[in-house]
Length: 440
Image (cartoon, rainbow, N blue to C red; front, side, top):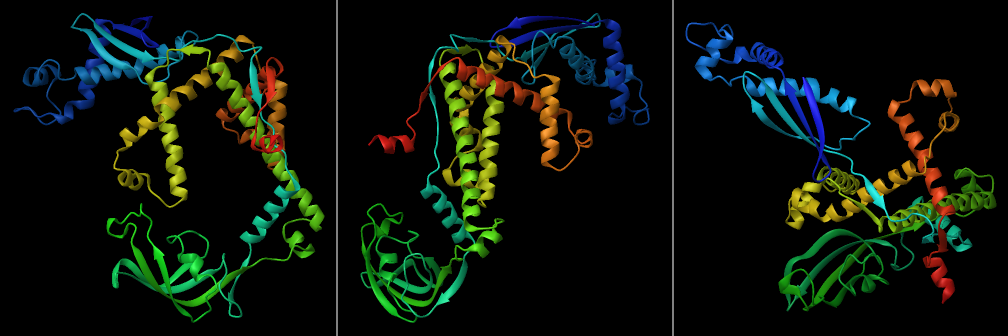
């Protein structure tokens, strides 16, 4: 077997693989042995007919496809390994047969490869730098949110319904004195102020007492989904059966201890620390994204469709997981939109192309600036991870996947890269919502 690799169009390489007559004959024999049991010839038991008899009976090329697959699977991976310094495959090849005879077989693999990227410049650019501050108000809002989350539900009998209460109601809706479809329910739970019902309905329930019945006059919005109700006046007869409210825990030492702190002030400090970490992480992510996006405006690469498709599929999978958390299946969501998976993927294509370009930019600058991760740095990072899970470093290393070490190495390189880019560009404070408010 011999092969030749030449660059081809649209970030692909053409790998021409030529097999000798002996290799071709051997592959055909292997294909015959593996598949002869599928064929029947009169005068022979199933699977016992000689190869030349089967070829006379079914055609000379009976085992060609299987033989070609065998040759491809045996040699293509080895070729990629030998050529790993010349190119990086990024997708499956398009296969074709250039020549096939008893003398030789020529197989061609058109393989999409990672493209080279040219960058106009990546130093001395004005780039937005994001910063977010945590205020006392932010801390109190977070504490209040936690109290809301763990609040108890208590039935209310000594006051009328208020915004925020959960009420259990019966209602019957009428237009022009007649009940309409979907306008009647019994034992319906409604959180007042949630905006579930048409404007005016929930506001009118506020102030009702348990056991009270009341007629509520409303007007359906002009853009209401039901054609026969758009803009129409309606009257709902509502009976309120039960009022339930949230009882928030007191913000005291008992609450603080439940949250893992010794005092209310210690809990506040802990909440502030967590919010500040989140703010710093958000600022860093947005700054790094701004850096790469700005540099990528002057970057050029012929990106193969295989890379765009892979990124698009990853984006769609993330969306699918997010829908699952909400209890919605992607197929049902697409059916609701009246589209197919393949059609919907087109919405991600441009973003996917830009995402791939940004990744290529990152990798190219790391290469140009010879940014490396030393063994000491990798070991230190592994030690940090081991400590975070309560293990000794050597014990932790035994459980590591090889890809995990590769990820750590890459993470160190990327961190160094962004430190370098921030130091070598003009970082200008971004107009974040907080600073925009200050500027008023």
